[in-house]
View (spheres, rainbow, N blue to C red):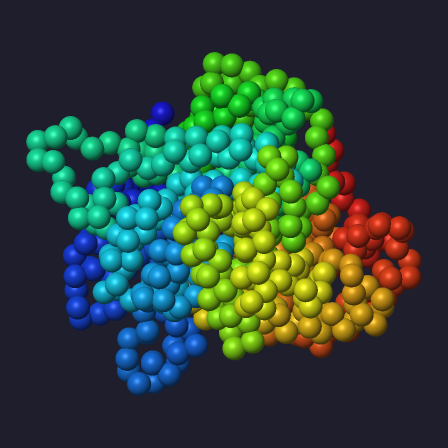
Length: 571
Ligand code: SRM
Ligand code: SF4
């Protein structure tokens, strides 16, 4: 069932924009040609998201430009879709070139294994997206009310399972890609065939989904994609001989919320059963059609799949899914995650090849005077490209894994990295820093209420002092910060979560599990830096003294009752 659009039925404004967009065309092409403004038409700013680009303005300069009676300094963020985060050295080099030529000279690795460019001017937008496509990557459906970049655990030590999980990831991503020709016309200059078949969007329909939809594939024992934070999650289950038996399936995760609106909340996905590997794409397709048909198209704040599940019930969903599939999921299999996040340094996979995971602070690949990360990586990747070896895997925690190297390749990569002062584990960075993550926030994000990426490194330095004074320098605590409650850095899965409320002020959330299977809870509403440290200092000191062997901070604050004792679910 694909609902007809009734403009009088109280549908949200975005629904009407989509309906009259002619499958995402709107007037984007005309707007790109208008030299009088750096912006595009208001309505088109909603549509370009589906094409992978957001209109933004430099918020640092907003007031100044206003005072000078200038239009805001508009530019565009471009998000490159990279299923499973896997790309080739050649692709990396092309993105690096484009970042220097058309963007702000940095590459941003995201929490969903994609790349972002910031600061692309309207006049360079088409060329940038065109060249991304020339490198055989694209930006289609990297944003918008569609299925987004499908994540896949990087799990270097389980290279055997990764190959199969990655295969499933690509199959799902391909199956759910929009079919509109608008993308090709606008960015790649392809003409529509006159008199050809009428264009259709067979899976999504002309109004696409009520809201974004996210899928991740995890490979235990590592939950490096935070699988339960996704609308739909697949957890790889081994068959006992190192092969893939299939996937546990979980539905209804999502983290976004709005301050002061309790009907919006973070939710972890529920495990509903097990499915064979050859069935994952069919299953994903049917789950998406259920959300297409039943998701809330009136209130965008409650339009995510998690609310469809909560409003109608998991039993209703299971029945509907079975009806559409024509087959039933098996019982979920036992499985266990050891940790979320990434391990750094070199690991030999079961394929005998080497995998080196680098810590990239908050995902920002840039050259700084004391740390020429972008140049160093460029040299490494150029050398790999020349040898025709290796691949790059973006992790779900904004880090980078240089993957599938022989002994000799590894030696070469290590030498080049150390020539540029880059250590695989960024030695010198504390365990806490290496487990921290912040969203982009200011100056580009239009929704930020407080700093995140630009501020967390400083706050971590202050937390490091407290950790060192308590003898905890080698202990990680997962600290996640976002500039607003939308949850892009997955703060509700932080042992310590910091969520922007207003400039310089953050909510403090405590007590998520370090395996990503228990949400944290709101502990304090609005704290500045000194207030925050005044609360965290005694908690960290107490943790140092009273913790059980191997006990993590998130578990400790729950056990001793600093926050309530919610159950992590077990299968
Ligand atoms: Fe996000 C919106 C950045 C992962 C929940 N997110 C945005 C926008 C596009 C702001 C906007 O709408 O104008 C941000 C662009 C900032 C900028 O200047 O670059 C933005 N989100 C990011 C990234 C880049 C954060 C990062 O630092 O890495 C991540 C890009 C992922 C990707 O490659 O696709 C990113 N966003 C997430 C995640 C984490 C995840 O998916 O695992 C979440 C929480 C999970 C979820 O979706 O529930 C997330 N982003 C949101 C939301 C809240 C959605 C909701 O259900 O309420 C918004 C706002 C919205 O959609 O209206 C949002
Ligand atoms: Fe922007 Fe908020 Fe997402 Fe951070 S969490 S990138 S501030 S929307």
